[in-house]
Length: 231
Image (cartoon, rainbow, N blue to C red; front, side, top):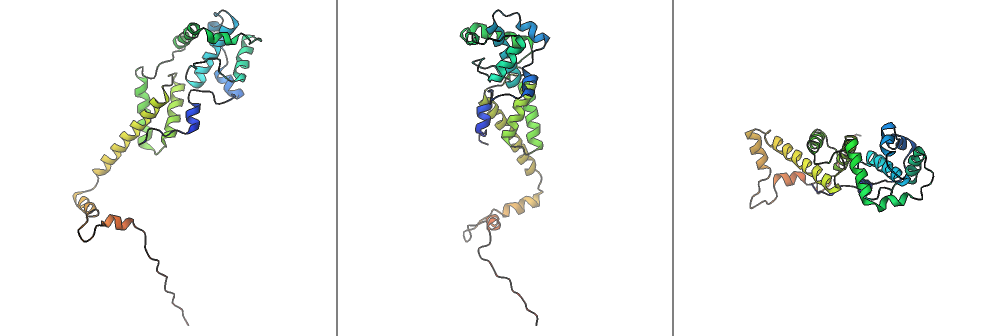
């Protein structure tokens, strides 16, 4: 099957914010509990504390760290800053100017909250097994399998891989299940049935159209029904 099957919305939303978050989403992913506050309060400077808090909430919500950690909706910034008691956000852009600090915070979050890479065993294998089972037992579209895979990765704290990596994985799995299906179907007919099926595709010098092609053609003429009238 073609590798590219995603919608434009799926491509644009993958690992990115699609707009403002709802109050429920803010409370679920960006609420800072005691463990979060203990880790964040160790940072020096308001912009470092807010920046780290934004990275923590972002990876919970998106399953990925952003190249620009402060490129988040305004509702997120306000929700996080209010919890930290920080009212002045003018210094926040300083957070992206110190790449070493940003990467250090990323590493700390990954270590303290057990985030794993996609290729770390056994996560790729587990996801492949899940997708294979769904592809074999259902006729779900590949775009739906992509959403299933993304949600599974986020819920299991596995960082999202590149979008093409996930596309190729789903395409390969669907190809495997299709090959298995055709192999299974090919073993079902008995010898006599196979011979009958083979005759359906046979042609001759006098007739280049096989019986199968004739069956696939629609009627070429429409015969009017004969109506018998009783007097």
